[in-house]
Length: 285
Image 1 (cartoon, rainbow, N blue to C red):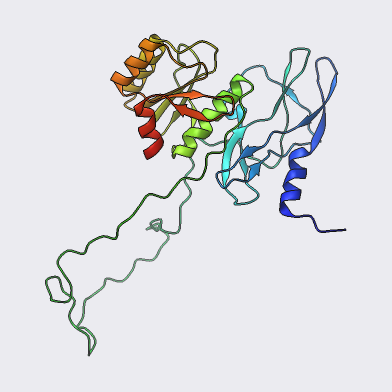
Image 2 (image 1 turned 30 degrees about the horizontal axis):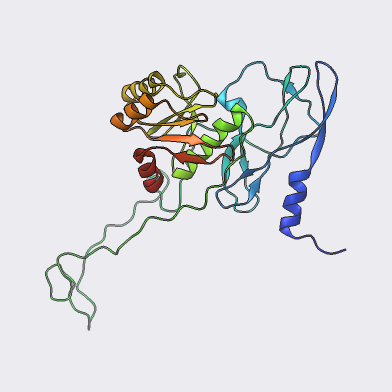
C-alpha cells in the first residue's frame, strides 16, 4: 500500500466523524468537527472524544465556548470554537473533545531571552575591564575605529501571512471570523468583552475593543457611539464588524471619531469600509 502523504492524513482527519446521540430526544446524528485555518495555513481540527457523551448547552461562557488546540504542522496552540451540534428537537449539544486545554486569559511562557531568576541563578562575577590583548586596538568611544554613534540596521515589519477566512453560516461564525481577523492583525488575548454592547457581541484584546454585529440590519449611529464611549471608558481603541453594513450617519460619526469599520462578507473576510479601517489593515496591532 502506498504511503499516505501528510496532506492525505489531514484530509482524512478533517473528514472523520463520530456518532452523537441527543440526550433529550435520543435521536442519533453523525457529526464531523469543523476545521479552522492556522496562521501557517494548515487546517486545525479539534479532536473529538468518542467515549464521552455530549452535553446540552444551557448557558454560555467564554471558557466553555472555546478550546485551545495545537496545530499538527507548526505546533502553534490557538483558541478555536468548541464543536457544537444543533439537534432538530431544539437542544444545542456541546461535543466532547480530547487532548485539548481550556483557554487561558493570560498565558506567559518565558522564552530563551527571558531574564534569569535571581533566586535560582548563581550571581555572575563582576566584569573588570583589563588591557586589550596584544595586537588589538583600543575600542573606546570617540576613537578613530569606533564612532560615537552606531547607526541601527534598516528594519521592516514582518509581513503577515494571507488571511484564512471561515465561511459565515451562523452568528457564531461571524464572531469567529472577527476574532480570527483580530488575531491575524496581531492582537492577542482575545476574549469576550466584560461589558455587553447594546447589540451584537463584544470582543476584547490587548489595546482593542471590538463589536461584532451578526444581524441583518445595518449598524446604527447609536451602536457606533456606544462602542466609542465604552472604549473611551476603558482607555482602549475600538473597531466595528457588521454583517449588514452601516447607516449613513453611523459611517459619518465613525469617520469623525476615528473608528475603523469593517463589513463581514459571507466568505468570512472583513472588508474595510472607511479610511480608518484601511489604516488598521495596513499597520496591524
